Length: 316
Image (cartoon, rainbow, N blue to C red; front, side, top):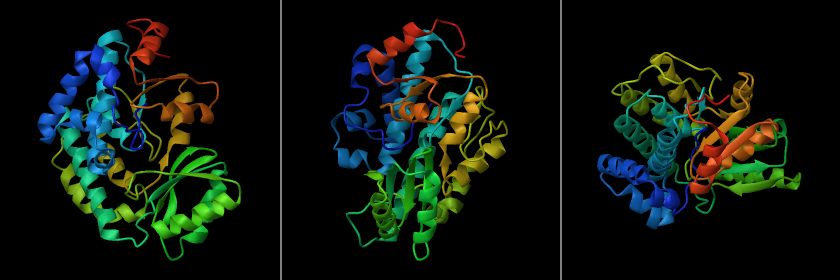
């Protein structure tokens, strides 16, 4: 599993880089393509800059990819299947050889810039508000109804079905504020996401044309490892269909619940998250509580996972 935006923090992967040369080697290669020092940004900040989506997306992509490559180098244990949450789907494609290292970086960098343009163009009056919030403690169907009720004049919708009682909402800031207030009055909690773009909702639709044109110049291959996409919950093999899903993913919700259920239905019960934090590991257990889940984000968790699984076997 590969995470999306929201798991970034200053100092991520510092522990791993002190012990394993491959981490900085991959970041140096990425920095050369981006033409700025990506490693310095994630180690020194400032956090405000790292949280800008066109910096965040390459940072998380490369961080997750570097941990995965370290895992393969150290253990040579290849997963049976992959999945990524939003941006994480691009990491999965990179790890499964759908796209090259160079193209993956260019793609998420451009995607991030297009998404940031949307937030600038909206020019919301509520400058202290957020385009995305996590709602915890209410059934997803109830939150869906509240969003529908409050989206008559503004756009607000569920952008990610994380668990049965945890969703992310996206849209206009004022509409989000109304939904949050209603949900809180019903006993829910909210977490503002420092992702100042309205991801996975209809506000993203204006960038589709530019993004589609950019994709035409990117070579896509068939995955070497199956990837469950979160749009139609399938493992697509056609490069054309994979591109189609990435385009529509921009303005459609991430259905992580069905993604995890699909993986479990393949008789797979051991999941490893590769990323700076353990966000996906936590929510996977809330979807199916008997899953064996571990997140690799530092040398300690890498050691635990390495000892847990034998070399040269496929995780089942």
